Length: 103
Image (cartoon, rainbow, N blue to C red; front, side, top):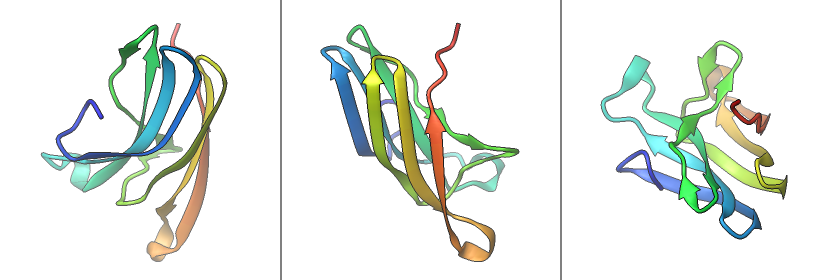
């Protein structure tokens, strides 16, 4: 996966040839803001992969060793993702995210 030397893909969806979305996690090195890992996603559009993007949840980057576990794309650039992270006091928390194309 582009964007990190220690990245893992855990979910992939390709609604059309040359258009895919992937998600997983990246080990952060150096360690920005004290976060050891980030839950990440990336797009492939017209056969070209974009940069990995850390998902956000309100005020903080979703950061842990957890990951995106499902991605589904109804059409190119129209995807949703879900997974889990360790939340408050290490209790697991689910998250969902939808894609909003950059204009």
